Image (tube, rainbow over all chains, first blue to last red; front, side):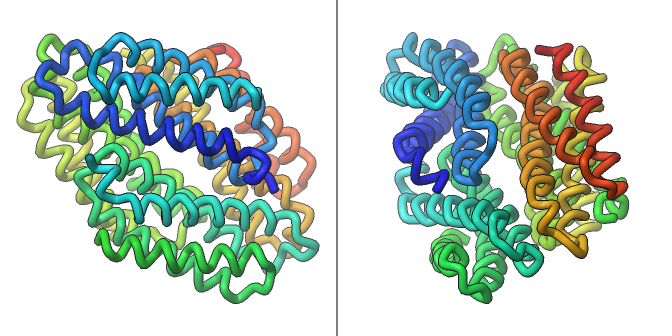
Length: 108
Length: 108
Length: 108
Length: 108
């Protein structure tokens, strides 16, 4: 079954979505939000595409490769932004993003 | 953190989304799809709202109770439809739906 | 057809989604983002639920009333937050939110 | 503003999402659903990616080109499937898909 072939990707996508949304939520509660604006923006972009691809994989989408490619691009860009910030939620998010980008590249 | 308070709900939502999308995919490959039309329709409704609530919980939505209530209603309706069909994917989906409905009611 | 019965609601939902996402984008580019954090958060919540309900209405969801009720609640909360801020994008967003809440209440 | 630059694309995406969800809904009510299974599946894929890209454009996503490319691919595949069927909802959906694919290619 579609969703059984993709266990590693599904796990990475799910953890990345959670990490991005947690980082987004935490960024919005930081003392100085101004420097986090790109992080907030990219966290949403990344969480949304990861959630989208998770659903698409579990429903047997015929577009695995195309969607995984764009997801990898977005995860990498989000990871690069998060990596710049010392907050623990940003560093953890960067790790989840890079890991997810690797899994997406395997599907692409 | 928001997403740590809701681990049981997040797990149930995720398993329900996966089960619904798997059931949807499998229904579309059955020999007689005509009798599965309501199942296909409700699988999509249920997968979409579970995926939505999963994301909302992980981003610290202020609308946990309202969203969980509608999710519980949709999970129950989908579970009732799936329960009618003997396919293994339908029975497994029904179980995931009812379990998720219970978790959603705790949040509502 | 489902989507023809709901033209006024679909229009309001679409305009509200656009206004919320525009406001979110503009808030992230303001000089002082700190005071906009709740606006950013609620803009995303509201855009997401409006987009969700738009799709659900056009696919003939059996859950119009339940989804419209939660959408009305989220639109109102977002409108109240946006109303507090003098930026044009916030005032326009508030108007779109309140109009959408009214349409959703008719469906609920 | 982002969403004002993309009016033609936003209109095409919205009409394609509506046409796909209407076609999906109508396919599930046809007398013989078996021959519509690929149409149902692709309608969902296409409606979801169009709705996704609509939201992404209105929030000023930095990933316009990448997302528009995958959307164009999915729209074309859905249009090709719908084109095979004589139902009015399928023919109208095919038209909306091909038109949307053209607009997406301009963004890509």
